[in-house]
Image 1 (spheres, rainbow, N blue to C red):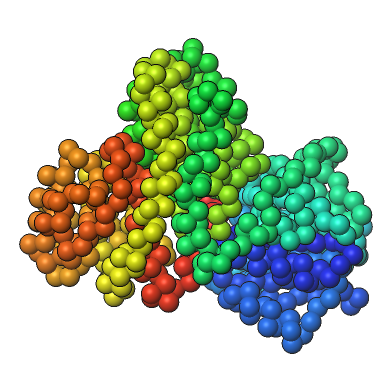
Image 2 (cartoon, one colour; image 1 turned 180 degrees about the vertical axis):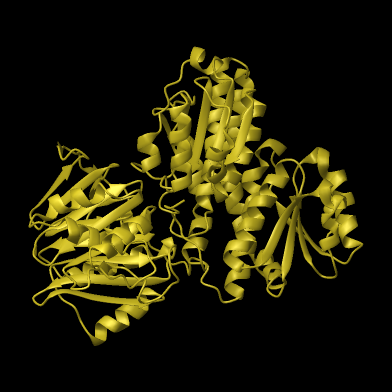
Length: 608
């Protein structure tokens, strides 16, 4: 992985491809490259590091053409290097390929192709693809691609061009995202929508096992059996400006500030004229719901932590047992799933490979699957039985913020819908919760107005080698997400502990001046947490508390208190997480880190 852009048409392909790759930088990468069809054949330029390095090289040695493919690589097979960077070609540069995903049987194919006389020079799995296409080629590029992919095992999105076919670009999708953009003067392929928005808002979503044949004047889709596929054009309802920084220094800060709107939109769009929840893409009868014996929530990373909050919400409101699981582990635990199971999969991008695999595993056992995702038309949305879209808008920064809070609003909405369908929530409580959730965005805005205090606190974390988050109950779930944020964008080793577990071993890690961030929003647990804070203070910790306004107990024990608006305990996760996002953000930028593109990370993890 990580980003593919291709173009065939009547304009300067170099500018279009490089511009598209720039819009995919948020996905994370360690090298970049481009292949252009020129008057002198296929020409390649690629560099290790940032896209700027490739741009600098192309200023010295320009490439011009009307067709090409480009790639930003996040290393899976082989170290980040110029040699391992995409595009990959045959030795004579007759064929060029870009690839996202993993070719699982590449060693077997490599051994076969070496016996056929081919020589490999990279450490990548991708290099087998151009040689395999070459081995299958008999004059028809599309036919050669079809024959080649019949040998491939794994996940892949491919862009392929051939020296003998100056106006033909072939793309393939299997388990890795791919779209086609319809420009005025040609067609684009890309891994994600932002790459094409400068040129079009009209796209086709490429489905699994489909092959795309593009020329400057036409695009054709075929299924795995080579039968033509008719597709509907989808119009994207946001533009390049929406996906820009909008005056903020970083996307992450912009997206933190977009949370008040995103939180409100995710619920508002589900309310009918009577103020009742209506889920257009989720058709579940009372009888079907009552037959559900348990719910699995499966996700990765930040979405998984949203799922842990979701477990608490669904169990409390809908009274259905919930099991949370990490998607990358789910398939290997032989989960107890049957036709009476509802599985909720959560993914901002809707393209997370492990989550997609978990969904298919559950469906193979008869489970009904509900997807919570931010991306309309994503693989998860198209594969699930039911869909709940969060209306967060495009999220560009690698570290998820507004998608997380929107996912939690999604869980409140779904759980309340379930409780109403089952008849176990009173009309008064139903209306009360809706009336309380809707203005949570305003309370988030109130927290953001006082971010100066958090910026000062972050300065004290800059030189920390380790930090710790503490919490109890729902606060512990927020502590886990807060710890992840500080790790991923500020590179501070951070662990989250259920505060009551400290004395069972982990308090050994506390020493002088180690930062401890204690989240305290659950009224019945404040006294217990105060005792835990005293325990770490006695061992020299520097303690920052995140607490409701007016919580005097925290002012008595913590070195610093970040006060947040008061709401009932059940709804506090949305408010309590915002200071943790800001702590991570300000620690990162104070350390001089590119907070939008933390090292080694990718926004959309499309390989297992």
